[in-house]
Length: 338
Ligand code: SF4
Image (cartoon, rainbow, N blue to C red; front, side):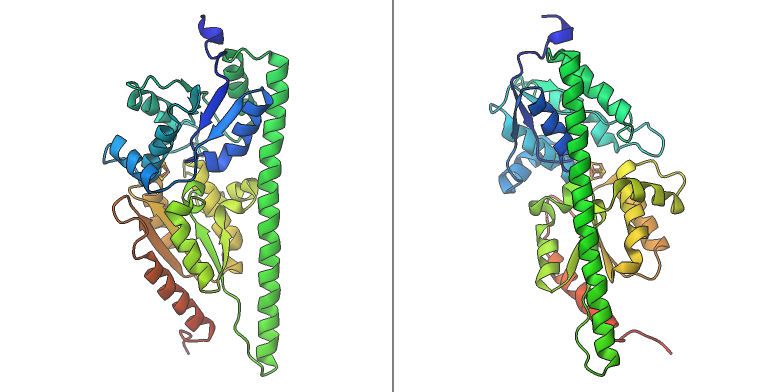
């Protein structure tokens, strides 16, 4: 079989429910289904998946990439090939962490004994539709798909991802407006001498594969909601607005997702009572950007949490509860001076 159509026999495509699946998963699944493939997404992360990934990875890998490897392992024998795209680091100001550049090679090398087939494409610049289209149409050609069908599939996939992202951003904006309204009502009640507890909005800032993986961040989100806080997500802000806003913070920051997260902080800072940063140990980009956020974002209390393969989220509940208690105390004027 020539290289041009060497993936034509791949009928069932496995997609690991990890890393950029949480950012581009709608595009990926819609595309494969639109070219007539069956998509199998690995089940939600659990202890077994996390431990398998830990076992197959070198110690230096971050928790998120170990979990990713565990998801690939879970797909062995359940699909004809696993889809592991490459998102390179090199694009100035919209690049990705090196883990995304090396993911395809890493999976091929890790699973070579199982002879796991890997299909892939290289997306040069994830913000440019033309670049993404070129990558997916090139992959479709190797899968034996006619150019016209690949083009139509890509359009459907691109539109589906955009619609999904817009729906998330709209839903979050409605939550924010409701929060603003409840705050105004609480202030009016206080002015009328009938004080009620003000609502508390907390912005969770983390890579989407951390925030939305219940195994990794579930304990944090649960603790916040159990304590009555309204949880907002930095990755659910309109990506384009957040990306542009991030240049108010830094002209040089190289990573797309960190840019979107920082832009979201700048856009929402005035509308939340506190920020919870969550990182997976040891994350290179976050070690730099979290430090900059802690130093440069003034006026909004920040809790910085690190989760790792050994301790997971053990102990985070206590830290989250203390943070929320402090914010509530502050709402009541506990820390005002003068
Ligand atoms: S950005 Fe951080 S958490 Fe994400 S893959 Fe890279 S090192 Fe891991």
